[in-house]
Length: 280
Ligand SMILES: O=P(O)(O)OC[C@H]1O[C@H](O[C@H]2O[C@H](CO)[C@@H](O)[C@H](O)[C@H]2O)[C@H](O)[C@@H](O)[C@@H]1O
Image 1: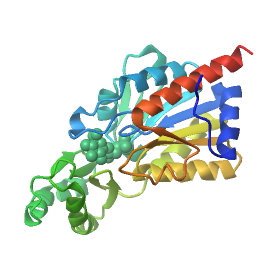
Image 2 (image 1 turned 60 degrees about the vertical axis):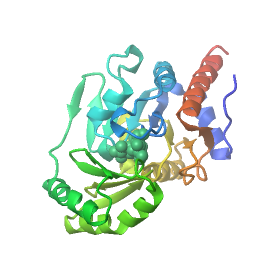
Image 3 (image 1 turned 90 degrees about the vertical axis):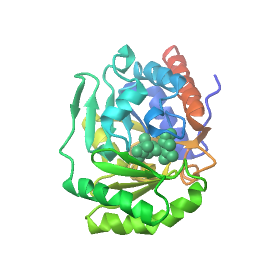
């Protein structure tokens, strides 16, 4: 068993709490970059099969497994292939930074109405991209949000920098905010983030320990929430899915692994560690 050990005392304490009381544990993970490898086409970014297998196995031992993502809940469930997997029968998916929800137990989606401001911003967006000479940037229509992707452009980073302020200005004109990501700027309604989502899940499940894994700036509020929960006495472990594109989370994490394949291996090894503890 080669579980990557935590780098920090807080992480080691949380791992101990998870191992000794798995049924009280909430395992919440980001989707893109954590469970799903990053690729050019967001519509085809399926979860790493080994990561879903490992999550399903772990789900049979812990209290709750959840995915907390910027994706619409429906998209995450489709790309993750989460429906109909027996081990994931009580999984929760919180989409669009916690606004949307899917419960595997009922198969039902809770999808609040989409803000009219997003529709209005979406009508202006193509013109703005054309004016900036970036009409080839991909627009991802997510209903409650709009993603502007630069990954497929010739110079993704330069295009990202060119877009940042104009996209922020457009969002502000519509009372919206911009969530920066990996070669993506996301225009969405303000007011909630992954930190709120994780806190809600902890409260709802009565978790006695929490593991959160992410890779990107949108996951920082969840990292901060787990750090705050730790200060309040709840054991918490921060898992970073590392990449050459973003290292903000690696610097804060208790455990750093190499992308979704590394996440899959870590989840598998955590399952083995819990089983070994149960067998005495
Ligand atoms: O909260 P997450 O689950 O991490 O979602 C964040 C954004 O991820 C997606 O974009 C990223 O993945 C794409 C597919 O691999 C990639 O092409 C893109 O460059 C990445 O930024 C998604 O498309 C966005 O809607 C999510 O907000």
